[in-house]
Image 1 (cartoon, rainbow, N blue to C red):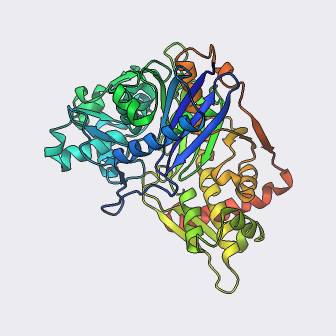
Image 2 (image 1 turned 45 degrees about the horizontal axis):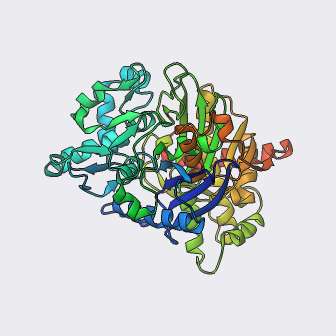
Image 3 (image 1 turned 120 degrees about the horizontal axis):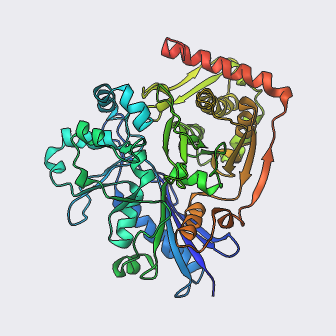
Length: 500
């Protein structure tokens, strides 16, 4: 009999399910829903919301598809892992009914609330205890609801992250993880538990927080009702959960100090692991509990995030007639422009407040446009070089914190399918890039295998992980790409009107 693991990845663009053969470590079926990107509602400028019931709708479709397509028999599915978009706020009442649309990761409405809380708690507490300023994270989003929707807030039974909500729908149990509490800025790293000071400052009831379990652990079993809705056999355990960036790092077996992972989907990230609680004094990058953290063997993930990444690339595609041009064609066209795009620069911060810009809404800008010289190919190249320049800006903050950044791992997907993007990334950052055949849903499935003890170690869980390609930089290009970055940074400083 086969031993199968199901990974579910709740993104803001789509929901993906992957079925993994635990013995070979290979995905046997994967499917994302819907075919087009899920809608993000913006009732007001700077807001971003999604209905959690929409995620559940597509979880049901994706689960049924991969289980049916793979002819899964009773007893073959051993565990379920869940990865999810970080920082979203889901509120439910005592009957587990959703009270309002989820305020998701790129929503900027609570920036001022986070800044006020940072002043009240003080830098001397926030940085060593929380390793971050409270910023625009989940705790601040919750405080916004308390202040602006008090009648709704009075009905709150529990608050959850998107993955906690899906786990609740599968098992009927409301739980969270230690890494989840840290991403919401509820975690005191010195006390290794929930921060009472955060709860007091935000006037948040501790009863609203679900019980936290390790990322690898038994976290409930599929109910009869959920089984009928998803096709998953009753009693299968949920045994792993993590936010998308810790999970992406886990998917690439980034688990030891000094190891790094990167993604370039809707947002772009670099995530580095360390065993000491590092922080940036300006909180432009953020430190969270990593999936393999224990008190005895601490593990932290330092995350830099650029909201305006793949979303800028897709905006360019739409501008050029999405139905008429594919991403491969765009990349080929962009490659015909010279490095530096003849002086055209893109500032890609057009998807909400950017953390590396200290939570400012800088906006997206095209700088240096020459109407007699620049055309589509320059715009494509400038956009991709601008995104990498923004990642490089954060990369250098991480280096200043003392992180050793030499080899970076990524799934061969999204913007890493672009030769322009890959070449710019390795040369601007002077790193080796390893590209793997994996994704967040496959990683969640491997985590589920660890959670139920099917894998005896993390290394055993990754025996089937396949390295597809290694991209090495050529030092002959270093100077050219440093000039591109320096020019980009000077354009950013013109917008900001001060040195960054």
